[in-house]
Amino acid sequence: MYFAVFGSGMGHATRSLEVARLLPPPEFDVLFSSSGQGLTHFRAVGEGVRTEASPPLDVEWTADGGFASKSVLPRFPHMFNDFLRQLAFERRTMARFNPDLVISDSKLSVVLAAWSKSKPVVTMLNQFKVLFPPRFRNRSGRVYEDIAGEALGLMWSLSDKVLVTDLPPPFTIGEENLSGLSMARVIEFTGFTVPRVRVEKQRVEKAKSALGLDGRPVVLFPISGPEVTKGAFVQVVLRAGRELAKRYNLVISMGVAGGSTEPRKLAGGGWIYEWCPVKDELFELSGVTVARAGLSTIAQCIDRLKPSILVPIRNHPEQISNAEKFGRLGLGAVIRSERLTPERLVELVDSCATDPSYRRRLEVVSAVSRRYSGVERCAEIIRGMV
Image (cartoon, rainbow, N blue to C red; front, side, top):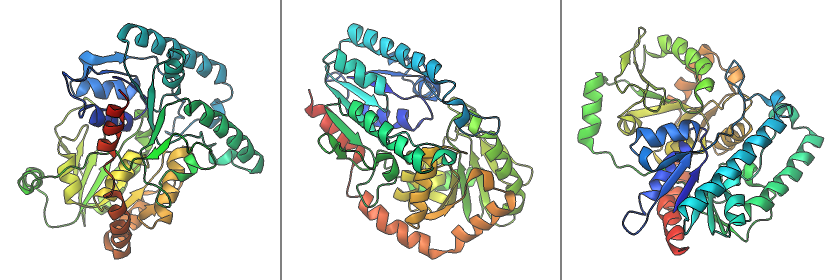
């Protein structure tokens, strides 16, 4: 089994690892490849020996941590060259490792390389289309977006199976990233692929005691995404934290793979981790989460019934779309990065902490999610392909 994993953020690496753990040796011999944060995460969890470093292919980010939409067209030739380097790398890796099955986690270069090598390929993803940033989404922009989406859909459909790691309609979080494509032949909605962790009460109490959390509600800030996107967000959180700490226990997880696991006390009250080793326990304790809008983060909030404030990465089309659907489902509050202020964040936390309607709607969607076992279903399909 060869798992080729998109390297931006850690959600892709996390779900591929969860699936691969259900394909144990000696029956299965697994090789991973990734770049960026994905590669760092594989190495941090002890998978470095069987993980190859692939050439990176990512977008550029602005100084304020947003998606640099203006640089996409000027950088297209460079990005295309990066894509060709990825394609050549994947072909070499497949020639050397000779896998019986290729699993692409959101990497189109892997699908094309497997197709060219006549290797069966299963693709796991939650985004077929590349949505345009908001400033380009006028009528003509949407036409070009749909054309590009259909072209990408044709290439993704070279996969023998496409596993959409999301809930089926009408609860699909990434519906706008999937809409309008005629790919029913190869698609299966598997449900979310985040691990369903059962945290023992003893572990929860131990984490609570270690941080000295009192009876006030816990607000958890699991901040994910590329490192360059975190700085401005964290600064707003820290300024808001001075007021929030008067009424809540605050814990910030910076999501730095391989970072320090020791918490630091914040001057205004609360704790901050580079890498939080008790994130599951803190999720269990939390009453409200404040997070980005990646699918893995949203899935955890839904499965754990946590009213949330989603702050999508500035100008990031996929996260903005995810967050808007989350808001339409009534699962929490949504605010764009460019509109986020400390004062507004305090208001939204207070609202999420006190409005029972969010919890009621979360229970409905979480019940749908529990009908699916995304990780197990992906592993079952993969087993059946060899």
